[in-house]
Length: 111
Image (cartoon, rainbow, N blue to C red; front, side, top):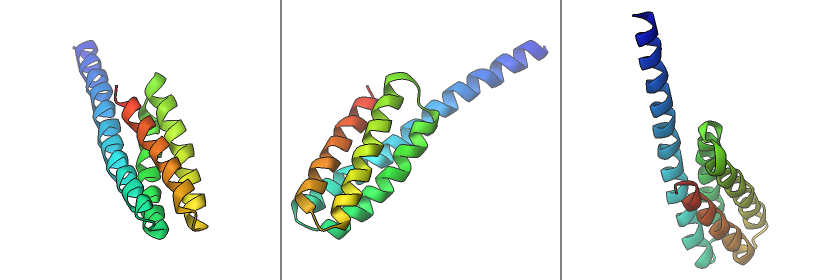
């Protein structure tokens, strides 16, 4: 009986971490896309706001991700940090390119 309970708890933990990662990657993708749109409009400060939120969700998803998904989320985090850094300096065009790279990596983490 104890083995069955342990097995069920283990399976629940595995599936709940996958759902947890999916929720964060969905939110990260939403904010990263918003950062790109604002960057294309030349709104660097708003790009930075969305990139920061996307970075928080990306890092949270990366904590529970494994394998290629983790690699992509880590790369997305680096791109988002670059977007934040350049956006903070008012370099909307460069920040937008970094945000676009992040979107590509976040999308790839879901495949």
